[in-house]
Length: 202
Image (tube, rainbow, N blue to C red):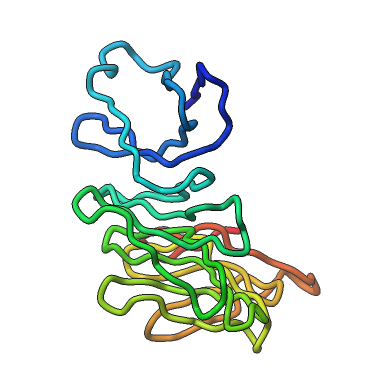
């Protein structure tokens, strides 16, 4: 999907584009009129943009089939940016951090469970988190006590995949963090996506 800014202002905001009863994430430019190019004419009247109310520099990263979007707000100040969740009924929700100054939500499933990463107290480490409206933001830790872990994707069973200690991992509530490993004597791996069957690619 391509966007054109008549004013050419490059401060990005987040928006949701509605097509009928479906919602799709879109990035827009502040203070300008946005045209969606390359769409069939029949779709034009079905689409509208919704300003999610975040600061300039914010953007959405993922959206589920119920129209819940997640991402990062005020990313122009990366050391103080916070993960957010947005729904049409609940509006913009700050997901908080794991005690540090920044967080980033990367993925959300159809049950409203979000995953991402956040700075720990003192910004001495960055850890994977999962978030639900019931439990809030929860530190999942890292592989082998590494200072870094981050989510890439989550499926509807709550299986999270990502990277920690330069290795791909899978996490579930029941089994915790599992190191997927590497090919042969390789040093690194990264998990990028997971499907409903629990198949992981990276």
